[in-house]
Image (cartoon, rainbow, N blue to C red; front, top):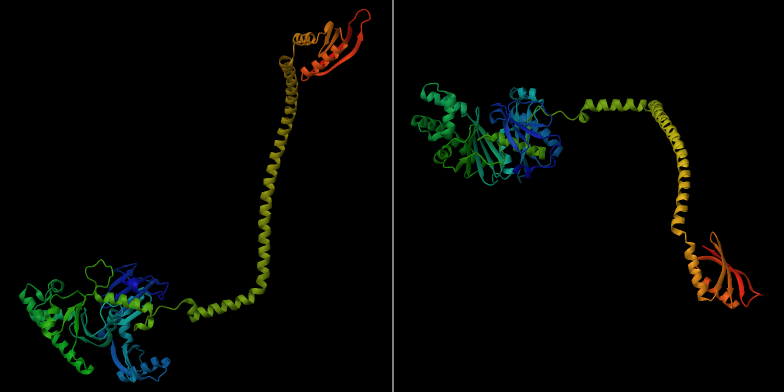
Length: 513
């Protein structure tokens, strides 16, 4: 948006809304977020920036010159003195005075001075001040147009004339290349135009009906009598304006007026720009610019928009906008004399009490810490006792379980041994008949005979008979090689020759696994 583009980081951080007030019509608007809308009632809110204007008829203006050698810090005081002297102001009255410098390369500096009487400002703005507690900005009406040039809504080249009809005032304002030049009030406010019309028709007509027709039909009204009377009134208006233009050209050495912009608080008056061109010979148009600001109303008073834009200018740079307010926002607590006195007093008392307070606070802190630790200790003791009781119960259960496990283990081991023995007998037991059969085969292969066999458990004794003692030793070797994984030992205790025969005898002992 246009406003976002021209916003500045210099704006006060505590201001979020801008309220514009026309004290003459009591119309109020608030710019909140991105929307400009009508406000029913004023209220105090320190985040609101309150802006208004003072009409041209309620201010005194003058142009003064100062030497360029005067120091900048003395300019304001000298301008105040000159305002009192050249405008003949009452020395006993404290006027609201502000100024704007004219951009010029002349030897002397030029200033426009704007003066407002305090009783006028109070009568206009005290009711609003009672509601809002302050008014941040009161702009002289002729300077409201300056923001149009600053924001490039209108090109700052040429001589421009602004004719604006307000409810209780009408004014003509001239700008030269974007700089304020001259302004004057004329006796043709909307109320005055209505009274003139009633005077012409010879009766008091309905005021609301009159302004409704003026707003919707203007100088192109379908009622010819209404149209003729309006044209007579505006003829007088342009005669007055023509006299002002003649004065302006002569006083400021101007050749022509480039453009005239005509508007009113009620909206554009239809046909008035054409009438102005025909009567004054000036290129004229409606004073109704596009400010790129969202509003719910079909038409919003142009001065409300100008107050809003001037407020944004002021928030960016206070020195760029002339301010006649007598009701400024109070300074922050730290910047007030009372605030500084209170802070200094509190600081002095604090320093005096600091030394004893250190020990007092330390003592309180220790007591508080001891009390907190005692509470924590009581809680932990209770919790420890709880878990000790639980552990005691669990130990009793574990002892009982250990005894039961020992009994069951003993029973288990006995049964395991029995089962192992049974398994050994069933699986590992080797039939003696099978053993005898195998040994019989070995004896036959080695031509050795047996005359007696005896066995006990895993040991076998064989009484061997052979015709050759060598065959007995070969048998032993053969059995050892063949059955090495089945026997633990093999031994022949005695080999001798039988004296009654030609045979050899031996007793063979075999330990089976």
